[in-house]
Length: 132
Image (tube, rainbow, N blue to C red; front, side, top):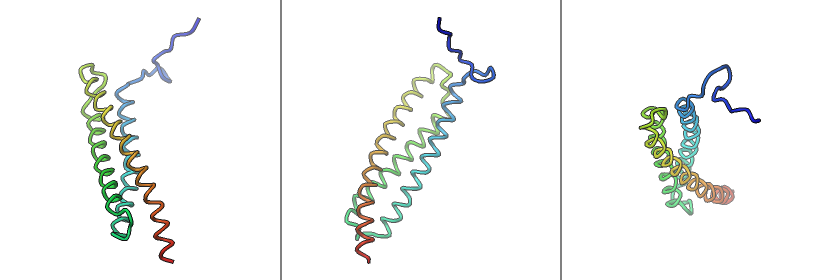
């Protein structure tokens, strides 16, 4: 006979789903800061190189789109982490909807940054080789 899984974690403490979600949101925010820093560095590079970069307009547009998406995700994260309590049943639908929107924006942000990385690496190598 299988034993029932207890919601108790560790030393008799129960799992607080709202506290877990808040911590998860904060951890995601820290990762978002790292990506935002990388995008800021890419933006600085593309602005320094300027029109010499073969894909200047495309790169500039993609980096700005990525930064805007990250700001939207951060706003949703703050909303999820501070304004909603998922232990309250009437707030669960709002939290679920906001979480789905944040997840969708995150997937789009990842896709945009994959494209940025693809164009940036090839062009960076080209520029470095043409300077020598």
